[in-house]
Amino acid sequence: MVLLAHGVGSDSGTWEPAMPELAARGLRVLAPDLLGLGEAVPPRRPAIGHSLAPLADLLRDLLVALGLPGATIVGHSFGGAIAIWFAHHHPRHTQRLVLISSGGLGKGVHPILRAATLPGGYPVLRLAFNHRTDAILRAPALHRLLRLSPMAADNLVRASRVLADPVGRVGFVTSLRSVVRPSGQRASMVEGRVLDPRTPTMIIWSVADRIVPVAHAHALHQYLPGSRLELFPGASHVPYRRFPQRFATVLADFVTTTSPRSPGPQWASPQGDT
Image (cartoon, rainbow, N blue to C red; front, side, top):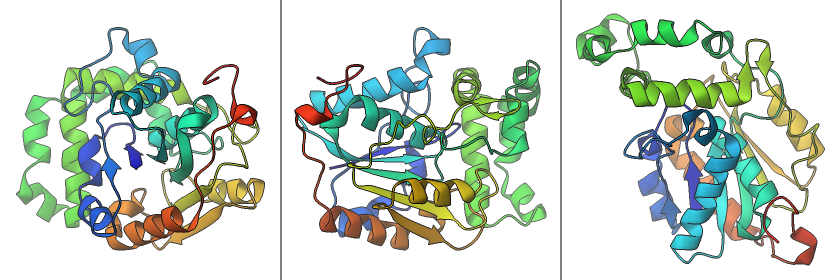
């Protein structure tokens, strides 16, 4: 089983280009919406419910509710930080770890995301993204005027749908502030020694990612010498969407050629599973 965790300002639909490719390669996949995004209900306490710990716990609860002993945890961007937290605190449910353009690995992040965490960030987002601007941003005429590729247009529409909704906008800002501050990302889970080298790990990144620098991928690969590093061409922050066939191929190969992490006493975490 492969569990996909999407990034901030997105929803499970982001995986749609890759889903049939993954299924064609024999992988069973779960792609839930995170709290307050897509079809998922918002948390009762947004400031807490959108942070890493409760989101990782809910993914663990999903596996338990479905009677699944564990999964290969795949996380993109903010979802990557959730996946790292999940693997650290719920090791018995983690068979493998796949990080795509992941957050939580270093300070570097695009200035726009840093700016969104400023005290005035939410009002600016409310002016830029609302139900009136959503109709404009969805218009094919605008996409043609801006000469957006089909994928870029789809990404714009997806972001607009999330941010135009008040619940989605709160989810975006609170999730972002839990891991990013105006000076950059809050912490490096490499420096915090959160990542366990015994967990089979694959790192996927675009060589010129504009959102989170590829230097984070190289640093993590050096820290985890047994990990796999797959670099995709271009500057996309969502390489699994731009190259869904290649993404499915490398993921299926990783799953079928690595042994899942075996649960045992040595994997117990005093803050997670015991």
